[in-house]
Image (cartoon, rainbow, N blue to C red; front, side, top):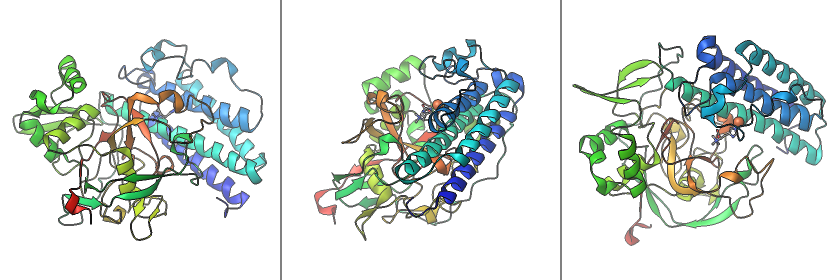
Length: 440
Ligand code: AVJ
Ligand code: FE
């Protein structure tokens, strides 16, 4: 950040905001007004709520806070406050209609660009201002991923289209790789757009461990399923077993058993499950049970981050598995460029120095760690962003999915959700402790 001129910072912020908006518009223009205001699942807001909420946050943080401008719509703050109204109740609110919501977010964006052009950007303020624009960009992209999950829950003909992801390219990969033990740097104090929960950088020791080279595939998962895994209490935690029974869960979300094998609905298309694709739409409980069946366990969050960032050659933690460069289409399946996870081994250029593939993109990965602040955590811009979620109810997910934009992912990025959630684009990989002779 120190190397960028004020002009560069403004241009980058403007470009990132514009890219996010193009995506929000595409996701909301893809359906008719009736679909825009409908609740497609109790787990999700109507798409039109997300759209206006994106505008309200931008008004609060950029127009009012950074710009010190007059409020545009102070009357709607409450309706779009995620803490005031649960998702299930949002359809009953006096929401802005589709045309009103579109006009509102456009108006806010014009003001935000005016603030961006005229806000003083120097010294300490520069870092803060640049962060505010980065935070709003990430906020919009996170809601875009949420809207993509709503699209997945929507019934009806397909309305989203994208090219197929690249095929697996790297021949035969080992099933697992050894990640060395010892101290590494977790979290960051340097990433300009890192959110409060990723900070500060701190040293942490991890024992040597083995990590799956690729995320668990549908083919591997189907062996667990077809072997009776969902009927065998041995593999499940008490909470996981209760979750299965109470909800009559017999397969990953969106899977359906046909006479010739497993099929799924994906963005309105009914298709056969592909064996070499990472499994997605599984809860933490299902991930944990699979790992137990396989004689393994889920990685901790620290293990995941060490595998993703630690470079044994230099001892340094990098921004991404492949180094410090921003993600390209060669590195990872991100940004809704494709509407599915890519087959295992499709991104050899994105592998880590120890040889772990597809840590970034494709599917969010459940870790065994509860969501907590790092030592020295300081909430900003407000406690409600992360701190109020700290505790044992939430599990940390890492790495982003095919629906995560590159603006909202990095080696330090932390996502969290309830262990029962399956509508998010979440999969997992497994790990095991290294035996004393294996530590290298
Ligand atoms: C980080 C994805 C859990 O969607 O609840 C959006 C991001 N925070 N608006 C969420 C977020 C406020 C958050 N997650
Ligand atoms: Fe939000």
